[in-house]
Length: 387
Image (tube, rainbow, N blue to C red; front, side, top):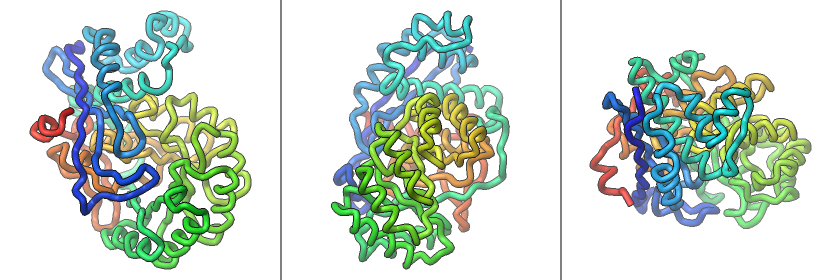
């Protein structure tokens, strides 16, 4: 089963005005993603997502170019079943034979960023192909599911203080028992963020899990001030309190609060996560399968979570393909307890594929049971929004 072709499509879809929201990224009017399609000589196709940005919007032109002009020539003709070998080929480049013979990395210069994001989409597509070829869901190939269902938490929460309670209660009315809200520089002051969290907790009561996400926008002193201000709000976690480049600063924030610190969505490869663990910077690890290095590397991260007794909570803010990739990793990982479920305007989650992804009336989502990732692209949507 050889790789016959690899394609990458930059999709940009307008978000309906009534579903747009304003955050530190500004007013998000479009949703972008890179759809990666791997085709084998047997006719099987696999699909994945490669991300140019953690948020909803961002130019994907460079990722498309990397996949089609740099990685495709390396990989066409390779056996699509050899996912780990292909990962090493891309990561190590012309020195991959040393890596495979010596059992250690000889990475290319661009071992982070664009190349790894591009690899992420290809890797996920290869897992999708293998699952289809074996008529098994990807989670079964990863060792099988650790549970039948998992709690999903509603990810959103941009409203001002006087409306945040109503917005989040709109999520819990749909069955979610956990919600996440955004804080940070979008509020202009730390006090405003603290006031919004307090208003949210008062509206939700004590039984609902409440997470906060600063998108890395607080300074270290501001993050500490925020933690003190919400100390009695029983936060399930505080996500990306400061710039992800400042791992030592994140560790400093964690050392001075009882609130669990979550991070990892902006990191490339398990090596970055290892460094955060070494700095004692986090309690919850959040790899994004469209950034970290695909399903292959996300599973390596899950082993770190298991080894160091940390919680795994994949970052699933993206298309249906990265969501199902993260969901598969989460169900295969004993360290995962909850999964992110986007409640923002996200056409890539719902309109890009023919299948309907949903939670039950209790906010629970079932383990994947369809071959591969279980998703079929809506090619009319792809044609309409391809850049």
